[in-house]
Image (cartoon, rainbow, N blue to C red; front, side):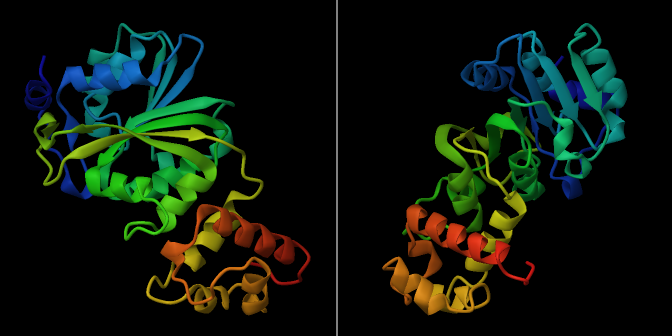
Length: 270
């Protein structure tokens, strides 16, 4: 049964406030699952299950599938659609309130992310022991995740994603494959973890400060973090008049590690 028919059958009207744009094309769901290379031994988490189009394709892999859906109205629909898959568990709760330690090591996240909370969801995922993430997001959000240093879109979420992961664009998805049609197309992005972050909260805080005033120079933004920002920039040969988006990823990591070391030996708390 088509997604539109399922929504009518269960009398579900999608809520704009929840960023609900449901994938309606099974072929796209299959392509996402195929490219995710999921094996029966994997544990896969989906955030924003909706009508279960992607969930059902994930279930067919034989992996343990844990789906999060905040909207209880989908319960009857999902219980009916997924009843034959014993490897699927749907939790009707807010993923953002789940303890990251809940998830097993090397968990994989494969999701059509709710449009209005992409940033917070990525931050939550990065706190888990994940191995990789395959997400479908609005194209403009994907552009920010994929943005390279020195480009206009390079900012907090770009830097955060690239410090933690190797990031790759997989393919675009037309807005016509969603119900209701969003105003922009979507992009499927792969984020493969390249290293564990010792203190994710510290990294997130540092990058948030660094990119908080995009029109200001690196020196000005770092003054809120370092007592001797100018000295630190000189140490690494970084032009203090640069803007944050023009820093290389290597320079950002150096600055973070220097700040983090200083903070650990300082009485001040972030």
